[in-house]
Structure formats: structure tokens, C-alpha cells
Length: 384
Image 1 (tube, rainbow, N blue to C red):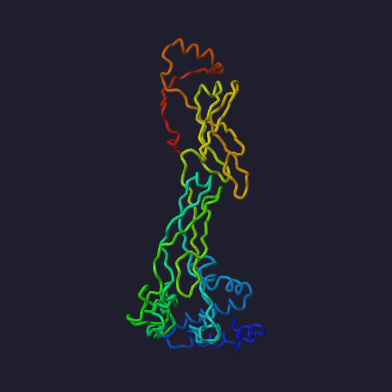
Image 2 (cartoon, rainbow, N blue to C red):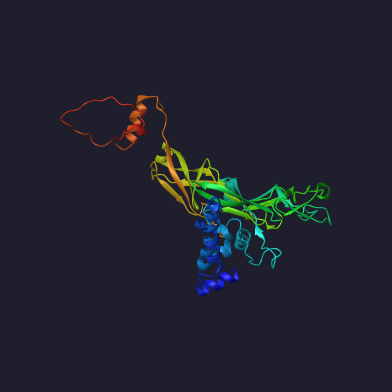
């Protein structure tokens, strides 16, 4: 924290510390009308800086995440860091220390993370997988070490950004609301220095960075979950004078033809015939995600019902960092025979004698014989 502000905060001297001076200097009511829009932006920034410095929790957020913690457009802390000393020094001309050439080196900034979607099959998540691939990355030029110039060439200060590496501009963000923003200088590419074409690095042509293909590798652990993140630390695009961000792969599970995942458990349909439901069966009912056949022995005398659920313990998804597994749930689906599968009337009589008898007939004083549609859809029911 700037020493002057820390001292005044501790002593609560509101009239003499830098906040009071700057707030008075940039108050919109204290400047000519043509300067009010710019002054309002600076006044709000001064107030925001003061509120951060005087609040312990906000100061901790700033120390951890920089000004990204207070930018509502980012939604949450963790974006690219912005040095509060930089903001105050560049915007208001205050000598805070820690600036290049003003008492110490600039704190390294962190580059943006790269978030990529990576589609995986349920088999990949069940068995685990190592993926090797080549990625085109932006790297700091190894020849000039990011200067953009040939060796021993003396740099010239960029005349557009005056050596700051960034250019400031104002952008309207709403009716009567103007925000001051910064962008990397497109003339010096953020270095603050400019080189004549003959003095530029031959490899990067003065751009300070080059594109190269780098071999990368990610490991998807057994039991990884949908939307889980695989992080390659420091493998995002490089920029001079920055710490590279991370490449973050977000796993997107593809739908499976047989299995449905529910946390660490699996479910699948168990398709059996009407004869098997009534008389039992002993066979392989499906192939698991690792290629093993799952055998079910259902004895005679136990009739299976449509929608009945069988639980097979320990045949679900593997748990990460464990030998345990979830469970497999099999939902019984009975395949009924097609119409006309019995060809003789006598066969119907025999089947009727084998099957349980129907319920006793319903008696009524008056009976209407109605027509019906055997292929109706329950979705057609209308609610009023």
C-alpha cells in the first residue's frame, strides 16, 4: 500500500492525505464543463482506490487477484492482474514506488488463461486416457528474448505511447457513463520501445513473439467427471514481461448408446423377451465399457416385471484415487412378440391355460361397447 495513504488511513486524517487531495482535484464540480466527463472517470477511480485501501477484506482481494477482483465484467476474481500502483501513478501522476525507474521493478503480470472444450467418451472416463497432441503456441522470441530488436541495438522510445507500452482512451458504456480504458500500443507492441526496420530481430520481425508448434500431453484420470478441468500450468500463449497463463481443458462427456452416467453409478436397459421374463434366463446381457461381458443368471420361478431395476454392485464408474467403483443399475425392458406370432387357435387356448387367469368380470347395469385407437399417444392429452 502507498505509505502516505496507509499513514492517513491509520490516523483518519481526511483533509490532508492523497485521497482528499485527489478527490478535490478531480471532482466534476471543480473543473470546466468540457473536462467533466474525464474528471468524473478519474474521481470514481480515486474513490475506488481509496475504498480498496481502507478495507482489509478488499485489500486482501487486491493483493491476491489485483484489480480483476473488482471488475464486474469479469464476474469473479482471478483474471489478468492490474497493479494498483500502476493505476494511481499513470492516472494521477502519484509517485508510489514499485514503478519501472521509480524505485524498483514492475511486478510480473500474468497472462490470460486459455479455456478449451475437450470431448471425451464414457469409455475414456471409465478407463482413463493419455492424449498427446501438437499445439500452435505463441512464444517469446528466443533470438531477441522478447525485445524485438537485434543484439546490442539501442532502443528508441515509442512516440505514440511515450514509452508506456499502452495507450489510454475513453469509451462510452452507457448514457452519460464514460470509462477510461487502456490498450496495448499497436506501434511498439507493448514494449514502449520502437526500432527501425533494419534494427528489428530477423526471427520475429520486431513482433517480440513467434508462433511454434509444441508437443503437449494431458492425462484424463479414471473416473473423471463431466465438466472436470484438466490444467496445463503455464502453457498458454506467452507475452514479453508476463507470466504465461494456463491452458484449461474442460471435459465434455459425449452421450453413450448403452450407458447413462449418474455420478459414480451407471444405468443401462436390460432387454429381455417375454419368455425370459416368465421362465428365467442365463446369458451375457451387455458389454461393459472396458469390453467385458456382464452375465446375468435369473432363475426360473422369478418373474421379471417391466421397469424392474436390478442392482449390480461394484460395476459402475471407478472412483478417482481409489480401487472402489460405483454400482450398475439395469432397468428391465420386456420385448413383447409381434401381432400374429401364434398361427393356430389351439395355441391361443393352450397359452391361456398356461398363463394366470384374468380378473373376475366387471358387472354393470348398462354396458356400452366402444371403439378404440390402439396406437394413441399420451402426449396428446390436453390440459385446460
